[in-house]
Length: 252
Image 1 (cartoon, one colour):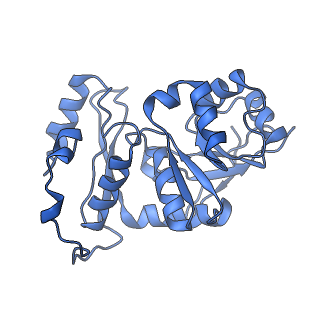
Image 2: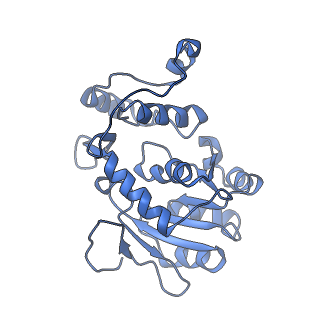
């Protein structure tokens, strides 16, 4: 599964609706890594562009599948970077994803008037926020392809042309956009995370965005397990744990 596309969004929802679990991979990763993941995960079905193109949709039923799923059932398996050896799969249950989204809807609420950018590769677990938060909130999703995400001019043009109101991205992505246009964050609602947020970088969007949240969490905690509102002059603290989660009192 590559960078966000319409087919990708449909595939994710189809697997979840069918009661299955997905294993997202990025075709841009080294072949050896992909082979290792596929051998270990042993998927029942591999969905790629060719597979989707060959599906006879006319023969598919137009009713929802009759399946029963429980909170403990796996929703997806993410493979860690493998920096300390072979990539290890982390199985995330549906209940954990639902808990994360319920908390995020309270602390970073979206409405039907909002549009959230979906730009993160789905093999990176922070991508969970970008499709599922809009879906569960009645907001719209604006899908950005790989080429757009890599080009700050194209990314910023998409954000402004499509009326995007909420953007989640890494510090590196925000650094790229802000270097291209210092007013990039103006009036946006922002989530920044996945890496330590430099104080100077946090200060810039905090002065111009509608709101900025610094979020943190490893793969095993679904996506983010702590969040903090970033305010000018206050740095980028780790903040409070998400619902039904405990965390030590500390700052980063």
